[in-house]
Length: 496
Ligand code: ADP
Ligand code: MG
Image (cartoon, rainbow, N blue to C red; front, top):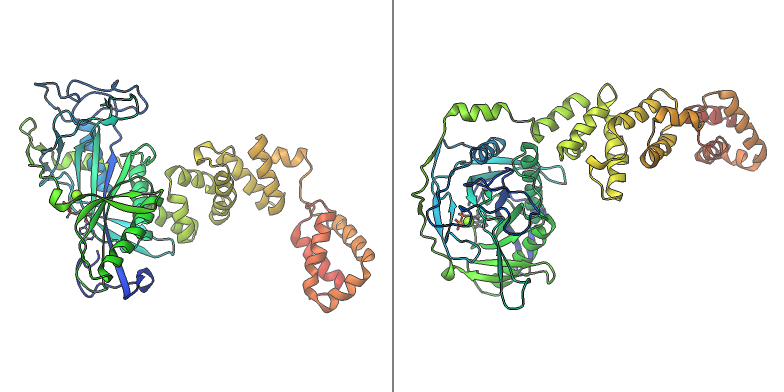
């Protein structure tokens, strides 16, 4: 973990921001709200399904009718523990639910049930892979369970606001990082990795568009080696790209103020992606006094180590372990392994292709051809028209010399748009590679006879071989075995 405040923490000069009066270091800590994957809410049996009619998923508890009592949902507790295990964190066998009191029209209880001093999960860490290949460890401060609020609708009626309580009482995990991040790149990579881990665990779907993963981003700046500066908190940023933009503009805003002789006020701000700026929402003086106290309707939450062990035994292989295994058993580069494990479905697809085949070639086809094609059409791996079995068959056809890599791309394209068995496609369309040297030789002889000037030039300038290779491939409809073409051409042109 990084040195929290002090002088000797290593500073990467590339990550510093240039101000008018020298270099600045940005310091970031994040509070992520992740909606727990669970069929029912944290303290009621109402469903959590997305897309229901307003107020369809509301029980008497969620509507805070007088005398209703919350009952803890065991599955939400299990999900929080699984997440804690995935974050290599301390699991607290005893935690306490508190009331966080505030008035809000879409919060009928008048308080949110949350965890304050005694959260269910304590310190942990996330290993974050950065785009340049470097890895950093980001400390987790805590994870606690709490209720989500409802939603006020101001655009349904000219003179009234409506309230939709479908989300009221849905379980959230608030995951708080230590202030260990030092650039917008690191912050984006952290959220990306955290989301990957949550998806592997199946504890949150990470869908930021639906608001199922939201980030509060705390930003401060300092001169390298100095103690932390005063932070501002940017609330509810809802995409990874916006997280990066919000940090960049907020850091520059703070640097400009300090360089101008001013000081940073601790406050809550909002990011406006259209204007590309953050603006004040409330200052520290206006900060809420939530009057936290233990919820008298709920006993402290207690479970034993056997409960934790049972959940640990059911966890899937997580991305770091999978990445290490891919490097080890398929000989992949760390970069390729990182790309493949980013989604569990991609990793599974890759393994189905690589099974019994060359891992590096399989990775190459999955990453370059398949992902490239999927991205082009904004499709996910689940919607791939080419199955792992079909892609595996294409790789086999290259491997046994039936087709060249170039023809394989054509076959891939045919399977993508028309489907079918790659081997049959190769046979029925006559795409088989020509390894018959007689046929290739005949083509070469014709080309040589028709281009005596080029033959002379090639003797002096062997790089012209490429031109002859191109002509031969053209003459054979791209089906000639490239190795045979090269060898025959060199022999006939007398090039070494
Ligand atoms: P609060 O309870 O007021 O929200 P916390 O101490 O829990 O305050 O911190 C909230 C978040 O702010 C954490 O993610 C933490 O890492 C981050 N943070 C704390 N100090 C700083 C700082 N000086 N600069 C940037 N982020 C910070
Ligand atoms: Mg906070």
